[in-house]
Image 1 (tube, helix red, strand yellow):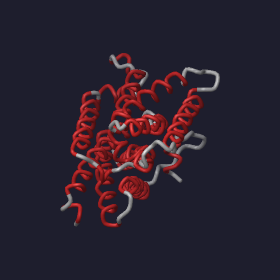
Image 2 (cartoon, rainbow, N blue to C red):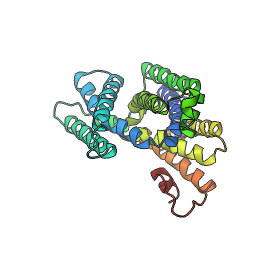
Image 3 (cartoon, rainbow, N blue to C red):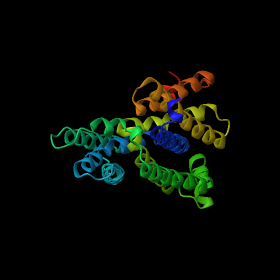
Image 4 (cartoon, rainbow, N blue to C red):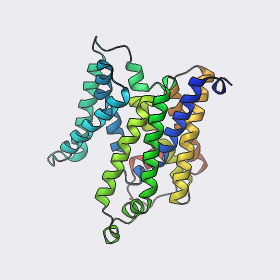
Length: 281
């Protein structure tokens, strides 16, 4: 198998396995606090930062970090507008940022790297890229491990959490900060449009299959890594885009999990989240 002989593919495999495991574990918490929209917002709103990094010849990782910081600040300001509602304000902000990024990306002065910005370049992974992804992944994993008790209290018992010294609002902000770190780590390999798949799909499958919270996290992390492996192998063997292959593998694993364990019937009149609605067809 070519992936076992090529140093380029081996680096790409290590990076996507690290990213898959990290994003899968983080995604479980994001789904439990219903922050999927925030993940999509940050991923799409960073596009101007990626394009500007390309224009000035800076590393994409630096552009992604700058884009995330600006996007987070704009989202925070827009969400304060109570006249239109937080979700509408955030949607307008994200759409504007993504549109600006697209306009910049199509300018004549920009090198022909739009596909890399949107869909990633796993096969272009260098040793510094791998080290950066591993460091950022380790940071997210350590933060989730250290904050497991506080996260559990804030997510599953927000009423009693303050009595335990836990402030749910701060916990959600910390999760969003970790999300920003994960998106920055993953965007160079998976691109602006595909990074969300590796955050949401393995986590959704893990929540479907896991009997406990720890089980869900372990399963999501393992499925995220497996999606990376399967996607990269499919890319190498079929000569198709690596980032798209990984995203499709993650979605396929979720579909298999949904078929293996269908959602339980809900009481009449109860509301469903968008993720639950999609999962139940």
